[in-house]
Length: 333
Image 1 (cartoon, one colour):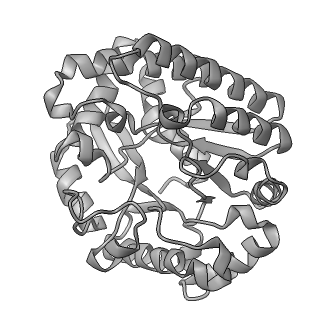
Image 2: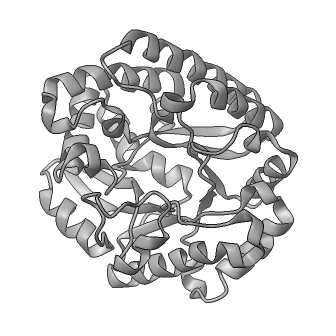
């Protein structure tokens, strides 16, 4: 087997000035310091493996403090975020392959278009093509938002304009209620592309593991079947499981993490297929529960699980790079 191309499909970046704009950030967190593109490259690509050829990253919006009730002024933090990311793409040329900014999806396509005009206003036209989709983080939002008329119309607009919708939901903390709403969304939109973040956030706690896994599995099966029925391309991102452990990764053996994670990988590959799963690190958030070596831990763990499941070399290439290129319409360099 030759080297495998690696695209990290889930990365967040911010500097000291942006820390206060992050909705989830707390000064007590060990990642409450700048995490720039240069820091990502130095910290992660220097922990390289002879198995991989690093190609670049996909930037996912970092949940900045936007306000849907304040018009375009309420979107200013997201506009600043994109400007910062584009500056990062210049400082580390070739590192950022695609960008998924925040968008006011619940407000409907008319506001969405006004926002995008504002978003791109001060961006170099040559850099705009890096924007491949949008995310409005749903994991902590009230029930009903994603099945509202304006939300659905916004997703239809994205599909029409060849943008991906990044779907952040949380089975661990919200149960199957959000998954049922995802089913309604998938029934309401056709020919769209969705990427579900972090395996849909299952619960990897030892206590109740079997029940948690089976519940997640039923919900995943349901939304996948609805997606297929409505000709929606749905990708599942193999990321974020470290954050769903009930202990810090340093306090759990590598073998136990593999044991807990393997059923989720196996079901993801069986249900979505090897052409619809995408690897991502969730850096630097992965460091909260995984420590400073969370990136190589997750990369190596993924490879070990794929080997244990007897994935072909072609399937490994799909998981680590090809599927990301297809989902986000990234052209080979």
